[in-house]
Image 1 (cartoon, rainbow, N blue to C red):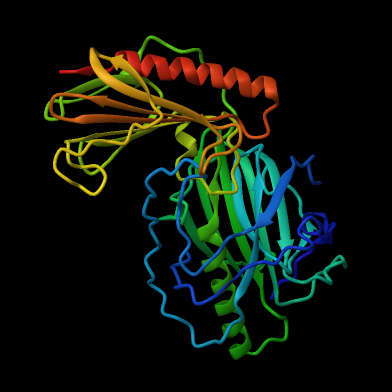
Image 2: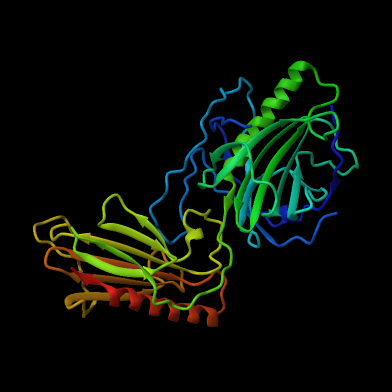
Length: 399
């Protein structure tokens, strides 16, 4: 058996959580497992975990929720009655990562995992781990980020509940390793590789039964922790509105318009339902993540008369309190609100209905300023959003 050599750090990451009540999670299906630098600020928050967490975009974007892909449960449930897991979610905005740490684990000091590491942190399950040599029966959780010039990840390809594609590995420790079992994952998003691993070290005097129990408990912990790894949007350079756009059209519904070329397009089940995100990294990121670049979200739909209200024949959308205008030579109604229902106080939403010969065309354009932006930044973003909205509506045609 091996022993781990870790040093106690501070409880600072947990002190910020005082007064909060974490949520317990249990009965999750078992999945297959296969000198500190200056640390950027993390924001620990309580993870809103349930037995079936959902992957949703950050409120209030209301994008269609992607169905999270659970890892194939090839391991059978263990016969052990393990306690439910209570975990906190920690967000690092500099590298755009979100991960979970059990609430009673202590932050510890470890050396840089590799020469390419630009960020790393670790926690251990023993709150009395202040000595140079940790007690046996130890679990240590490490997250680290590397510049993406290291070897490509290998292992079994899986997805976390936030839709992040990861490669998982299970390694049995050799005599010169400081662990008996390592359960790990890696994922890549330029310019970084993200690594998240759980090292388990057996009790030196453990019996065969005790070893089996500890190994099963280690897998139980990992099966929960690994699925909550998520990636957040990171700051990017703001580009001026470009004349180049991606064309959106459909012959059956007779529409044509353009949105900026770099936006993420989410096609609905039919061509009459489409959504767009100005920041592709925002879609399906964990709710704890900020919006460093702000967000312009567009929902578009086309409906025949009669698809409104209670569905009475020839029913039309309710345009009470809307301003009447003309778009593409057709009668249209537009309404802009700030801080409406399911919106932040600085968010601006614009609803547009355009009456065609065969269909009503609907745009919902939502502008969310960057998280924690000052007033000047908010105003600049709103102006950019207004210009983008005008470009989209000006490009609209009924064909």
